Length: 165
Image (cartoon, one colour):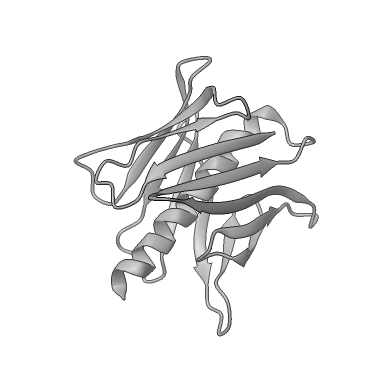
């Protein structure tokens, strides 16, 4: 399954729709305003229900973002791993790895067995970024929002790193 997310660069409002290949909205990423740290809700538009949340931890030394499922249970923590040559991230609880060129949004997510479950690619079109999230066919439907949460969490971590420069 391929999902596409377009967002306006330098936009103050961080709400996004994820569309399918036909351009139909499937998920909405909704920014929670007035929170400490960035927080997003992932809404499944077919069900009109929240299926995941992303919450940035503000008191951690290394950039860290948590992902919660539809029951508000913490299912993953995305933490930047210390590395000299390339940015790597560990998705704890799920034992997933995120590897590739994180800053250019050209990376893959593998499960605990080393099998790829998603591939993320960013294309810059005029003043808009288009993120292509290619989720492998064998991934169960209830894992898709968690993958989306991991991608958004990495986006937050990269954004924080860029803000520090």
